[in-house]
Image 1: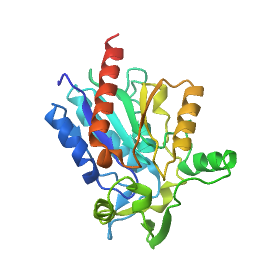
Image 2: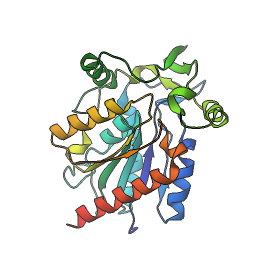
Image 3: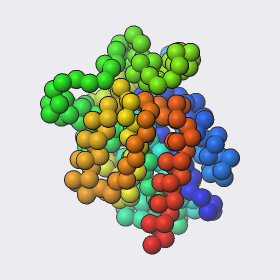
Image 4: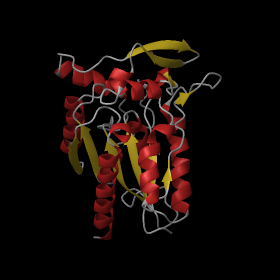
Length: 269
């Protein structure tokens, strides 16, 4: 059993685990065990696109269960679409909801990096996006151009660097765009197995003020809705675009460490 919790990184749509590398490497140097699994709603040519969130969440829960079996505590660090999958995967692995616990370890907190967060159980990204758009009719940010690539997959086209990496150099943006993969078309409307895990553990949310994809107003709206429903949410602002793990890795690491310390203190109390 480690004195530090295991950090499990849940990435967003179209991204491979590689984009966690700068943050993951620094945290490993500080003594954390870090796991960045491939999230199976992302894939490449030849892969079969998942048609619901249930297998995505089940796969994440297998990773969580393996760490908890070692009597390690776990903190889930979620980005973008990963905020829905990672938050939902905490179900049953907390001291508040122990249905899956078989050792002294547990999920002790959620860290959201400009992430979608389920504001209730059984709600989809499309549901939350439509609700926000209805109440905020003037569009903001950069509209992602998404095209159907067949067999249940979609991919971004146009200039995704403006959406994902707008606070990085053109060269850096092009490099990371070249690493994007396909994303299951079914995920936007999927609500199966979605669980508001913040009902069981505290949540920290990094609001990225320059994000052109999940814009600041949307991030704040998600946080507000969770708080109104009873969530314990600590927020901090970061002058970053949609990918703070790449453009602001030091600030991201500091935020994660502060959150982990707070979760540990609360658990001891």
